[in-house]
Image (cartoon, rainbow, N blue to C red; front, side, top):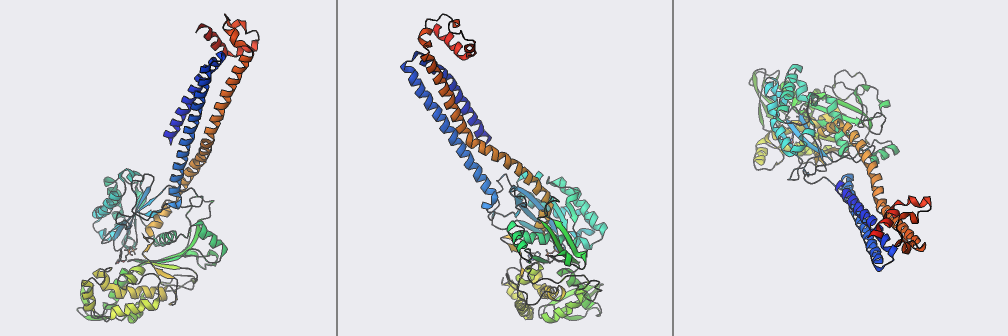
Length: 595
Ligand SMILES: Nc1nc2c(ncn2[C@@H]2O[C@H](COP(=O)(O)OP(=O)(O)OP(=O)(O)O)[C@@H](O)[C@H]2O)c(=O)[nH]1
């Protein structure tokens, strides 16, 4: 752009010089009223016209380039294909989700802010060359380093390498890296968790120069995890758009969706509420996605609850311990929460047991009911599980189930999309009632491509638990039509990590918005100026040129020219003091007599 501007300036300067010198010579030739003078006028007119055409052409080119760049970042370009890391205008962000069952890295990017006053950053998960979202997972969880914390950072090294490989090297310094841990780290002692985090804070900057400091490493609370999952989901569903907000204003229905997130260690539920109707504000979370206090457009009131130790893996451990706790060591016990005929060896307080599956899903669900802890004192009714208040959920709100809600219905049972209690129960009963040896053979024959062996073994327990939590614990109707287990929306993974990045970068959005407002105001002005400039210059050329010609004609009429040849000095016609002001003419007149 700057380059073109300089070219224009040079053309204008050159044109002006030619014209100034040209008119000067023309005038002189005209004074002699010869044929060469007329030719010179034609020649100069052509030069003026050409200069004008060249300027208009270059300006048109510039304007269309500006429009293409603007269109690219105002939604007309989609980011569905592999991420174009050669595009220098993109910014990047990295989130590590250190969960109880494993750690994952998610890579995100966003184009420059569009400038809309209520617009959030347009954040997308990076897509690899194979068309799949870029993420990398390792097992076991970060919390397993509680007794050898000095290896914690080294354990995360593979995730860092992955991020560094996919984010352009020159962008590392400006790319924020957040390392956030969830239930696994909440369940270990504070001292052990701090030792792990300290090791990470110390070692990560030695290896990579991402934007990273102590404040970027944390064990997030369950409520934050729930809030981030809710933000992620609604962002991906487009529920923060101006259009959704308009709908929200015109109906009593919330335009946002609720989320139920079952992890390995904890369970979260979050949905929008009318805070005036909440009987107990303990579970209320009021927050804004906007960085300015005065902007209430993105203010939300959420009911968010987290149940630590109610994630599927934590409850499985508790369930098995309960089962064997009163039995003599070495006993084989019946377990309705395992596939028919499956044998699982467990140990508890140095005693060993065998659990033999009977594959009875309904029985399993009944046996799991006490683990919801619903007998616990409920101070504000109604309560969901563990004595926690939960207001009645409107059937008008869409709900999405993520993590275990997707894996437990999809990996083995193959259910996609819309949730139907009867369908899930029927398929679960079929799978769990099938002899384990048959299911194992099918798995060996790759008939369960989405499930690993651990999933196959724990499927009966996990599906029973998610059903029990959803309907008995959280009181969702068994006839619910608008509950959707998901792991991806529009090719992007639904993870709380995206919500965390949106929340963390909301100040960045404001910064970029201000920058955009500034540049767009300036560029509006300069665009208008650039459109008018060539015409103005053309007009100036014509006026100056015309004025000189008229003046020359005037001199001719005054018969100054013929007499000039005989004039020995300027004083001859400079009788009027005003004439002395015409210095340019004086110089030329004084020059020609000697040439
Ligand atoms: N099929 C499949 N299963 C997964 C995947 N990631 C995790 N799981 C399973 O889901 C269970 C729960 O894992 P997550 O949802 O990741 O939970 P988490 O982050 O480890 O647990 P929290 O700390 O409670 O948040 C694990 O026991 C895994 O078996 C995945 O990418 N695909």
